[in-house]
Image (spheres, one colour):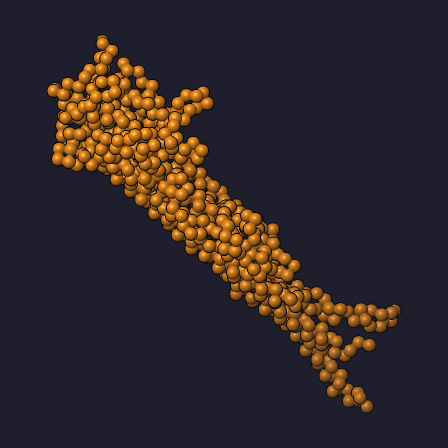
Length: 576
């Protein structure tokens, strides 16, 4: 027998269900602009029917509706795609910023950069070749040499600041990553507690997904949800979050960059896992981009060091082959009279030699002691130490110091096939060595060492042998000695120009990759929003639908109440 109040209960269930749906719709509308919010909906189902007899047997009469759950709309596959691609986009975005700063450091467009300084230094030697006895021309060579060393050291200083800035950013970002992981762990605990009764902690899950998206900015991550509803997050084989536990990351103690083989004048840091004290290596995202940017900045310090190395070895060697205004000379081992001239860059008359570590492909400069007794009697310099050594010789600052500029050269006589001795008288205007020095800017070392005497480049001939850090010659596969310079097949001008061209190409390639990833991320974000985003038109339509449903159930409830009232109170004989 069906209860008299069954219809009332049916309508009450309808009212409650429409009320819950209206509340959920209002929740969606108020959070339409909340970052990371996923729209929610009430999953409704008909309640169990009630069996009632009829003329031809029993029938099942519906008893209304009830809510199964309030569930958020979320595309798990779109989330996975977002977290796979987002670290790559952030990687290129971070690199783009670093390349912008590199291009600013090496900006030659305002005639204030390294290229302009090298051009002025080169031109001053060209001018000196025709006015070798002019003190003003000699002073100009010295001043433009100082300008070149200054702009190189300014660029070095900016690169070091950029590296230190990257490490500062890494330190802040590691701390932020720790905060994100801790908050995810806290939310995992809340989700487990709230969903123990079967409910779905939708808003907590939205917050946790937003934090996970933020974490993917810095690291490559993979996310797995366990049977309790908590997240387990891994990065490169390291478990960062494991339900209610997490890994702690920290910046390791800094070590001098010289410990890695080259001195860049900075302190290097690694990210370490506190629990195991092992180095953590991000494979993608902002943190990986920071370390790659540091390596890129160091590579440009290496290029500056290569230029300084060239000036301290090749350029100095050629300068010491020339004669200064005083005609200072000495006697070599064969008894020939040879110039006794100072270095243009570096200290006095000491020798500098290019050295190379083949295993790690690192360029060094060996600075001999004043009176060396062996190939190892001196100091091995690298990186910023080489650049620091690049100073115009202090002897040029003496009274009439310009007289030390070795612009002159003895001459090769084709008719006799011999070199003439230095006749100081009447040769003060000779600028032959200045010509040779100017040629060094635009010809590569192979041309210098292969020049035949009659061609006029004989004064540039030197034996530049590739030597290891102990001073031993390094041979090629054929057993021949190799050229000892990082710029062997390029002139110094070409080397710098190619480096800047490479910088431009790398910066452009990074911009292209970032733009491509931006398109992909827009597509994935639109894909996610199509499922999880709040659509105003849809929500307003639902609001009207649930409002009408609520009103209809209320009207029906009122009608049933009136029917019962008439049945009970107005018949007059019921109950007798």
